[in-house]
Length: 354
Image (cartoon, rainbow, N blue to C red; front, side):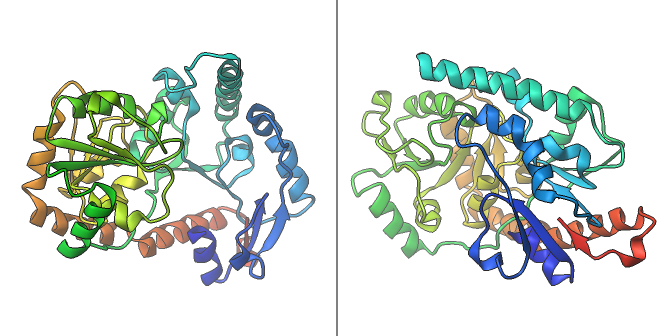
């Protein structure tokens, strides 16, 4: 949404290939409707190239900006958000037993090889935009470094620190009046890649930590080893209240290309504990809004160390929000469009982006 808005505000004519389109855009862009098969994500993945070409028809554009590996070779600019091969290497794919889980696992493995094929047929004229330096390194390790590339970090929200009164109200609502210790927030849901299985034992070992959990499939989740020191909320709409109830946010992922939740938490005044596998970690350390957590070390001392720096952390969060603001993100994006445009012989007549 933000990238489309930046282009529109800069005077570009925008076409969007998508199955769904936000109603606020329908009178402002050309919507090229995308067909997506109803079942089996492996089929959806492997047929995407065909259906995207079908949606494009015979149209020609001055700049093509893509987000799906299946059409990376067609793009002037491609944004790399995820590498399935890395998730596979770190054993983050479906691991549960049962026929349905086995089918999911087979599809995931199929996507790994299909994505490999896309990235090994890289168009040297395409400029790759990585969402983090970690993603750039991993891509280069797996597929070699693209000739044209840059790191283009997703925008950080504006600062919205909760007041002490708002924090007290949020904590009472989501944690309750009985618990007086430190609240560790976690927003990854019950997904192995997000690291909840390494977080729970760390919290279980410290009686002064409470886990406030949210995200996909987490509603009703219980961890017997926490003995009542866990509240799982499921999917949530009210992030303001969630962050206000947390003392720290844990991002214990096995593979997180960037981790926007880390940015969100910091600008809400909540310091972040993250593993080395989180792309945002370098920025958290640079601005003093987070700390590295080695999963074999106790979590409590790291959380308490962060809590002792609350004033400096808020100053750092404000600087980080400014450095990675949506406005700067838009300027970087438009500069990339201009570079792509100038590399073409018809640059003077160009005005459209997809």
